[in-house]
Image (cartoon, rainbow, N blue to C red; front, side, top):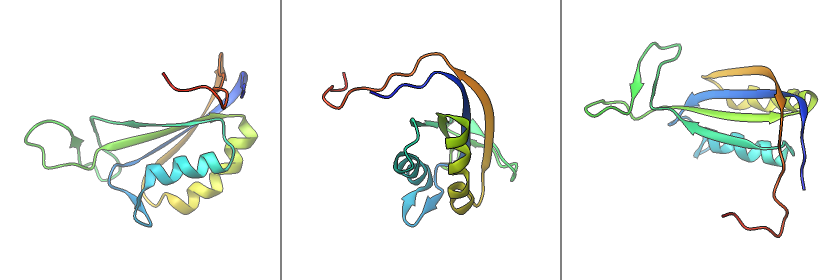
Length: 118
């Protein structure tokens, strides 16, 4: 069972939904690499509207021509482990925003190998 409490670092990677790395969605590649690196966890959140450096607004609203919605990959772990993962993002993220925030983990308990998701 994994446990993480106390001071931590939150890594947020903002990219486009249509961004890819070798025929795989970029957000998925980031999640799989985070898992392979042994990080505590990663979650992907799809935005409903946003804009970045291009100033082009992407939205889910009807009649919008944009389907390239913003996606946020959020990873939280100990400072040293998150910073150790940053070189992989340098390789992957050509366009996007990478943000680090100090945070405090109040409760994080991983599921045991034998437990099923409900």
